[in-house]
Image (cartoon, rainbow, N blue to C red; front, side, top):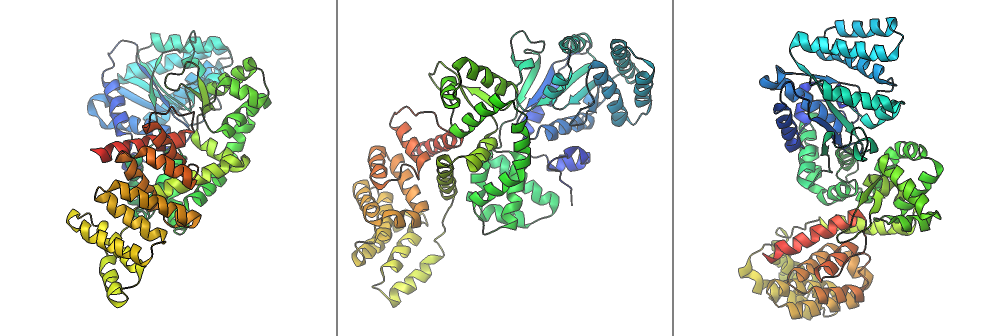
Length: 560
């Protein structure tokens, strides 16, 4: 069994890290290409990994360092040196270069470098000279080994804040330009001011690799690798059984790999649980970190962050100002600070001139909604329900034989005819559609006011291209069925409406949803239909907007 570390991947062996690294392979390949093209004797193209906590920055950085050692033509030219994930001891440039020397001993198993660092720290009292001597020792290593150094420094934004004298940040930049022997690979939770702002010393200095959340396929690869690494064959079965539940969590965590692994373990521990229960358990586990991060903020910034999170949509600065009862200039200044510290991000809607702001870590937003918001919590619960059912897939093929027996024994039982029609329909055999229609019509004849039977007949008629009667039957089922029918038939009802929109009946479906009160329970589908009809959507939460985009893609795919 291969170990996994959710919070400390540096504890893994190179083989364990390699075995668990199954996503972001394209990013790794691009980083290796970049390092291979660095010209000798010229300043390096320095690199920065950007992504929220748990997105895999440490894993990717360490995998990159190991890959250099595994690639002969890179291994002879480069010496990887990994700093610890937290570098609290660094307060100035002298500390930075001394830390590099000490980590160099770990990387090379050569105690000379840590001994040199300790001697320098003991004997030299002038901090500027100490920094110069420590850097000179690193250059000695490069000359002796004939290799250039790659320093993997995590949370570089924090280290920059710890360098209290801005002149030292300028000095670091000058050194990295003047010394082609050093390539700096940094990481940060967000694009921070020192690398983002015009006039800042590191503006446009790094090649940025933005680590986005995992898509569905990468998420499945990571969890399959988890099963292999830990020797747990029950994981693939849980993924197959609970794909709707897992996909819901993927979306609401922003595709965060660490949270997905935690969620997968919850699926195994609680096979009868729900996606919303998983969400609440994840929030409970992450609450101490979230509270600590939020409490780090000054009072006014905390208030602005609260407004952003509670709003759960991209907001204009003036909207934030109004909610937080601040002046526009004050709110804008606080928003800039939140962006700088990685709490918020700036974004632009299509054709919009003014920037909007939203919480950068989507799971922060979910945390806020579950703990502090009433109305938006209800909206979140509806979204979780919709996403879970949207990703469910029924299986009826095995039911046909049993239903045929039931209709032989009790030919007046409408439910047997209805399920038989669905069993035939779901086998995707167009030649049997007339048979399915006969069974569905028989069910409606026996129970003309039964919304389930009407819905099944609507589905069969839709498959046969008779959309006028299909939608009439479905509208009547919604009218007489009410909330009980909607709850019972939710997965199939959602699929029926999606197919109708894809077939070009968006306007009719929109009216049906309005009349049946489905615009809130099926909010993503409602907005997707509006967008299909050419309406311009108001700012929406990222989690809803992603589903809207996927639904519109599904409409398009169905039309092909």
